[in-house]
Image 1 (spheres, rainbow, N blue to C red):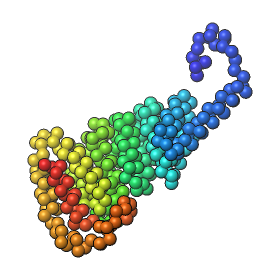
Image 2: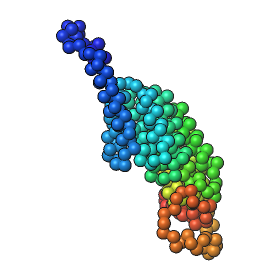
Image 3: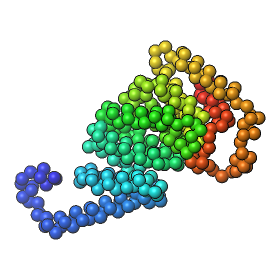
Image 4: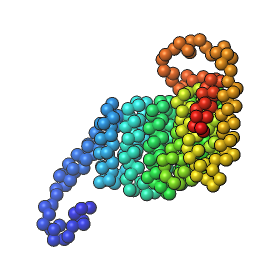
Length: 303
């Protein structure tokens, strides 16, 4: 491409490149790309980030995405957490490439890949990283990602409304949903914030399900979701008004319904003595204590 753009006089003086040399350059570039794609699974976050940047540069120069997307899909679907994190780092780099950031199809493609991570991941730190990457993809695409934004918001609300707090093994989906709504409302651009505001009634109804979740990380994420709702409501004409009063009443009712004696009798004695961290899948049904904690956090936020 560079040679074709040169003036004819300069092109005539340019030393011709042999076929063997050209093939050697192609092979070398392919080898470098393969090494960088393999390093996406490195244990070091610094190495993974550097590999992601090199893959992005390769794409910007060569313009061929098929192999990169195939390897990216493999990395995000891997059972190795390091490879998945490397895949997320690569998405963070690729979403800023002009060819993908200017069209909605690019954002939709990345959202589908990230959704697969969120559907299977049970690690809170990985879920948070995937959601931040999702927000970056939507923010880079801007108005072109309207359909993808609506789809992600609908899926998050579906996960929250479909699950009750007592449904064991679903805390990771509720955690993802809370983080996605917060990301869309606060950090993904005006189009995403408008999409959340348009469905504020559904969002506020769903937040109370997450506030009763047996996993503390999910309840804390629900507080962030409630905070984003407060920010949206405060900007509306008429302010908080009846919405605030309803949220305050719901918080107080949840706190007042908690009876410590009954909760202590129902809880297993072994759970109090265990100091080992609890995986998300092992979170049992929601207890009165979980609900009381969530409502106390909500009350603090409202105050």
